[in-house]
Length: 286
Image 1 (cartoon, rainbow, N blue to C red):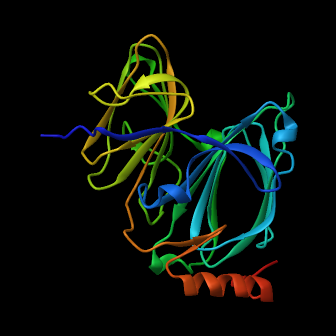
Image 2: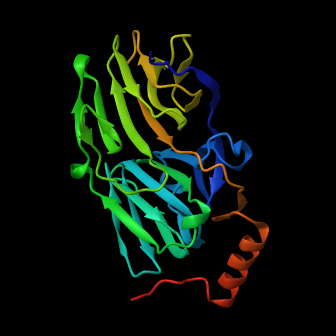
């Protein structure tokens, strides 16, 4: 018999300022460790005011994690120490594995009307992969399948599988699932999640009910799930759009300072010393 997951906790994202002065909302971060293991942070950046985001995230290092950027509206220009540069536009995803270390910048530009909307999720890497070579899985919006279910429910599948259709992001060590789910009013969405995996939902817009106990969430709300085999989300008079994220917890010690996440304080110290000395980058550059 399948066990329906219940909601564990519910809270609202909080306004904060990051980078060179970007105004955003933090759904979770350092204060919530280790509740959402293997996930570390989720930022929601949306604004119609360019001054809120144009200062961006100038050159900075990462080591030991993966950063996942999902753009809904607008565009983000990026560049890095591997010689990559480009633009992430509406509907695109950039899944960056920092591994042994990368230095990059991300500069939001918005769209023609000044609107910028997207998310950045940080996922931890296990000790065995902290120093793996950096890599990217860049996915254009047109490459992300959209599955249409009964009742007009639409699911964009970035990673994971819905209705037998798998997303384009593969071979990630934490076995993640990242779905963008849109429910019309008066519909029910049921989806299996692997037993033992951490799972949460973040509401983009609208209102819905995320378990049989009636736990509800509206825009800018994060809901964490207890363990089980599947989730059930329903709507009444309003439509709902939310991110559904799950992954295999690492259950390892976390030493985290700024953009670098390792397993021990000594590893953190080494990383920052290497950054100061100019020996941080282990990969070839071009």
